[in-house]
Amino acid sequence: MFQKIRYRLLSSYLVVFASLLGIFAIAVRFAFTRSLTEQITDKLTAIGKGAAANVEFEKGRLTIESDFRPQDLIAYHQALQWFDTQGNLISQQGKTSLILPFVPNKIVQIQTGKIPIQAVTVPIIASDNSQLVGYVRVSQSLEESHETLQQLDLGLGGGIFITLVLSSIGGILLTRQAMQPIEESFARLKQFTADASHELRSPLMAIKINAELPLEYPEEIGPKDAEKFHAIANATKQMTRLTEDMLILARTDRVSNQDRNTLNLTSILENIIKLYKPQAEAKQIHLKIQLTPNIQLIGDSVQLTRLFTNLLENALYYTPSGGIVEIKTSRVGSQLYVNLQDTGVGIAPEYIDKVFERFWRADQSRSYWSGGSGLGLAIAQAIAQNHGGLISVTSQLGVGSCFTVRLPTP
Ligand code: ADP
Image (cartoon, rainbow, N blue to C red; front, top):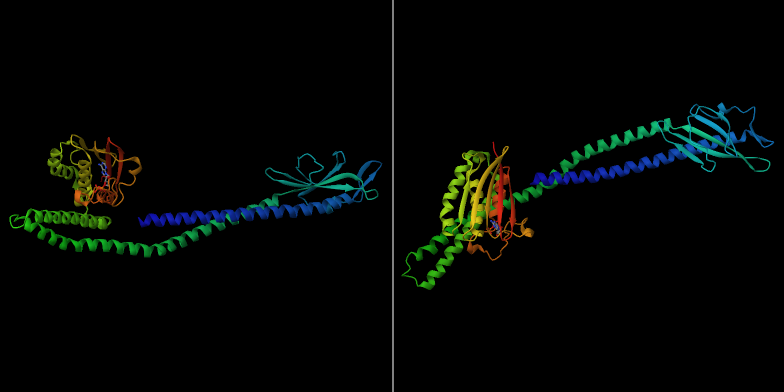
């Protein structure tokens, strides 16, 4: 149980932490890409302005000055393009694989692809009459910045991975430390329940014996007193059962390996059925049995007897006379299934999840005096889980219930 809580605590912590790191990485990536694009835009704008200053506009024609050496202005991964006001390409310098159409009012253009290209368009203004005479488009392959971004991604990814690994180790240590006092106090509480139940056994036994003793001499006590002694004896019986149930519940997850033996579940079930047959007959309940012979299991026979006794007791109690209780075993792969089906009162759908809770009863009036402590199914489930199995239930109000115990076979 604590292992599960620890695991859940750790995984939710890691999910939150990983999400935060992810958001942080995306923010860093976004800010870095933005500032890189801005830097390149500024650089290309400066180059564009330089190139724009080296053109002449004469008789409505745009020409590049003869003494202009573009190679001084641009690097190997950059290119220059001059356009007239109509957007016709006039001249071009440098290597470029820019295929984006020229759009005069779009200052920054980015061409995506294997090697992305960023282009910046700068207008050329005539110095004498401040008229727009053309455009220069400067472009640059983003291979270098692409590589820088890849390195950043690698750094961020690696950083996140290492942080997550380290924080997982830290998380494991922290959850272990945080759970330790809880586990200890839980163990103490369980020990207390076990001790208290154990200690209550002897005084209860004494009360029971002393209450039953006068009942053996009814002539010495009046019928009124006999009734009282009866009530005391019954109450003590129920309290004894309750303390025994609590003791079992406090100890079920402590089945030591020495209590586990290879056992024959068929004969365990047959013994239980033999024991409860008179009760079924008295209530005119038809017991239908369909057992696979010689089912071998590894487990604690006392606990397994308790598990199926609890289920059968319930089935007989909640089935009205004339009903049917069916006990069936089957095997699917390495799993053994024991079904206990009854034609009893059934369980309302809204309560079906509650039946395995401790002290829960659909009918609150079924008090200790009428048998059952409300711990029967909780004990049955704890025992099944302790054996690596599970109990499930399907039920329909007024039709009946079917409890299925699944247990692993060796
Ligand atoms: P109890 O001691 O009251 O039987 P259990 O833990 O064995 O306690 O069962 C809890 C509750 O589940 C019961 O009070 C009853 O409402 C319901 N229940 C258990 N078994 C059956 C059944 N076979 N048919 C109908 N209701 C059942």
